[in-house]
Length: 140
Image (cartoon, one colour):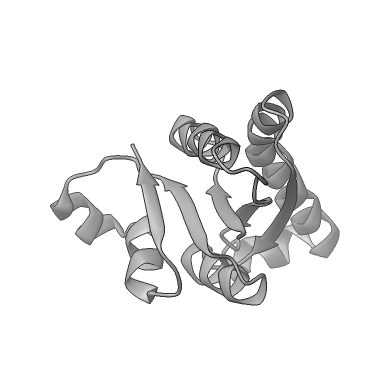
């Protein structure tokens, strides 16, 4: 079994990380966790203005920030994990990694928006669930 944990640096994502660690600890042989941060791309005009090197630095800094608390929580819990980051539509990136890494489930945090707000603003968690790639455990 392999568990994908999508993080975005929020407190909601950190709760999901902690819950995934708790789930992992219940197995005789704890399954490995894959931490994944998907950074939305910059608008093309902004990326062109900044230049390739600055855009790369921007995304690397976002990933460092988003993964740091999750990494620390899993190290404290003594849970085996790997981490990845990618740039693109977060829901598409999560679904792609879930397939390519043959993950059995995803654990994701939810911001707890109402159905209407999620519909209007979009929800990465909702999109991953809708993609139907794997079971998704939503932590609030």
